[in-house]
Length: 380
Image (cartoon, rainbow, N blue to C red):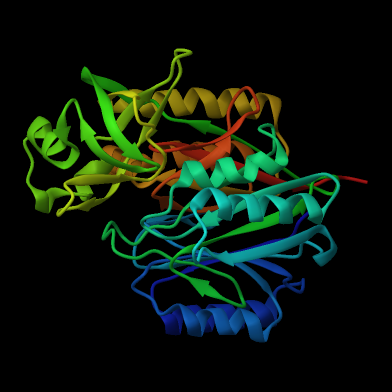
């Protein structure tokens, strides 16, 4: 069984005190930690404290922080959420890369090679920074090396809905345009999980006339930014913030669809930058939250998934920032249900995009999704 210790802090001084207290009082020596931190904080002093203690760190900036355990039910912002664990060093490897001149897909390929070289039966938690990062291309790059059934969960870093600069970090490095994978030996540390969305199509269909990766230039013969603003009757200053609430539903030829949220705009080119790929020629429509129904949809999926997967030592939640905006205080309902069902610590953050495996076992990139990863030590 994996031992854990969790805490939340709203200032660096509080973090330092709680971190030091934990090291002096808990009954295990931490080996691997997760830290989800608002951009209000300076990351280097926090990173250095983990480095000094030789604790491997998987960290991300956030759009809000989450911690539910036996003593805490916390959903907030401008804070630090930390999980300390005693997962053996032999059971995981952490790989971190700045993107540099690589495309998002090429970055994913490099990470994919590192994953398959880590263990004979790997699984992974992935994190990515960079407002321009194409989450779908990144995931596709990984899967081109691992296969589509590869077990991988994670999310894109946030920055408190500022949409300026996001970060991922380890105990050794910090990047505002990079990615990392925490690879587990799945034969010893099992990763599994579920996803749930619930957004619905809104209005007419449109054709994407011109796009490159996750940047859309023209829709239905109109400049993409102008078309988006006219349809929703919003101003440039409302974007990209409102784009999280009204993502595109990209409709595939096989009847399935994926959601793509706006994370940036180019005023000169009048283009929209999405969290993931929007293929040229795609049919898209606007989409929106149907309110309480998305919560009910998630509730049913949590109950169903728990019925078949009742074992966990720790849960990580990567939930789209749009769900927090749409549900407000009610967001705690779906999160608390997961905490109650498994009765284990649940930590996470509100993301700009999510990665997870669907009911068919296929891994992909999403927006507007509740993505829950279960981690447990396999019993000998």
